[in-house]
Amino acid sequence: MAIIWAWGWEVRAPLAFYTNTAWSSVGGVDPNERTVTHQHPSGYGGGNTSLSLTADSWLRTAPVFSVPSGGGINTTFRAAQNFNGASTVPLVAVYDTGGLEMAGVYAADTGVSTRLTVKHNGVTVGTTSAAVTTARWIRLALRWAIVGGTVTLTLWVDGVQVLSRSTALTTVSGVDVARWGAPMAGGGAGTVVAYHDHTVVWGSSSDPVTSTTWIQGLRPNADDINGAWLPTGAPSNWQALEDAADASYTSTPTASTFQVNLQNRTNINAAWTSPAVQAVQVNVAAAGDGTLPTGTAGMALGGSTASGTGTAMSPSGGLCTFLRTDKPGGTGWAAADLDNLTLRYGAS
Image 1 (cartoon, rainbow, N blue to C red):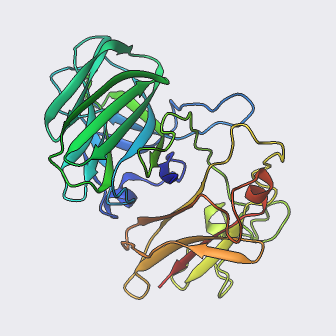
Image 2 (tube, rainbow, N blue to C red; image 1 turned 45 degrees about the vertical axis):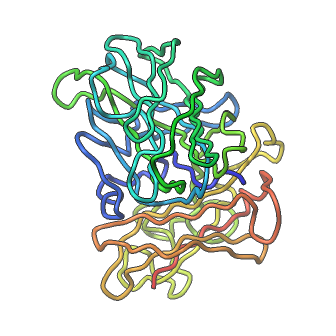
């Protein structure tokens, strides 16, 4: 298979847009953090938004992807306070379609460094001998491979395998939810203690889950024509997204569908081949209403279009998303495709 879901927080939506779309959270959660972010390799831009959490806080997705039998998750985190080995909150975890934890990574020790404990449905599968420390970005790759009634969990830290153990499978094989947490000691009321960024989910245990993947947020042109962005009188970039059906801005209640080009806004160099573009995901933060409560994200390229499934959008804001590993009307992605891609959103 391939990457089936990704999240880099670049949609910049407030927490309510997540929880209105069946995501859940506890504690101090900010998915629009712009103070501490995980930068991309030199020459490939930099994401400027991450997820921040206070001590023992967590954010959990709705069922936003589908991994039927074995897969992996690759993500980065940074601890800003000491770890708390007594915390029951995982650094990262994935859950089966019934809500049970397929695989989770926890802090084992208390202090500026910690070993990592890997669990399956509450059962400790193993604890690493190697430790991670605070004050630096760390990349975790966690794979679950299912054979019969056994699940094997394998963990990598910064590309180095630190644990691989098997245990009896006590969940169903399908996974559809991810969770990020902050098992760290508090640094005072409201103090941010952990950051997360660059999360991708792989759909098969044979996929290269250890690949160093980066999520690049691309800014829309916002006027649906090639060339420099022209706001056409709207006071902000987002209000200038023009409705393709009735030519009114999306801030008006009559907007039912729109599309927006990336041309000449992202300035992706045609030589951008390393790191390779592995997938493109459209994320839309929007509000629904009683007449048009369902939102659908999509994309268009060279006369071909593709769309995701409809998502119930709350009147106070929601999220819908759509990912493609192959471009509409073709295979693979090239940098030039990103500059010519049109993002789409429809309400029904």
